[in-house]
Length: 168
Image (tube, rainbow, N blue to C red; front, top):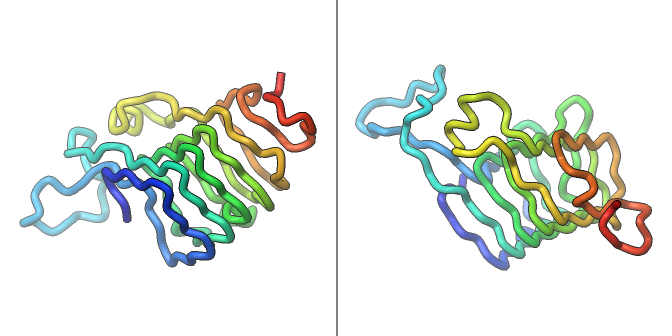
């Protein structure tokens, strides 16, 4: 679990995780009391700042299908190669993470990229209504059962665009 961090030029290549949380958002206010796991923290509970990953590599990184949480994270100029792979039964949801100028290569399967922060409470917790998703390069990716929700597809480079220009 990572929170309130800046991670630059880090290689997660061929790493394998049993559970991963790329960006924790909130934390327990009173550590002297046991955590009540049956209820989410209140919207006004203390917050961590967004965790940023800059120019990091995730090649052949194994993410668990049911224990991958992107949370309050932002990926800038990162490479995801044969990493975002799941099944229809247990897709990977990237919400509410932000992806800016990242490159996706190899198989990208059963992933949901979400550009809108869902629900009033989550937006209040994050302090934003949208997740920035711009300038990402999918030209060398094979997309299989991938959803782009509330994302400007004209601001991405997609497979089959041989001149590697932004889609217009």
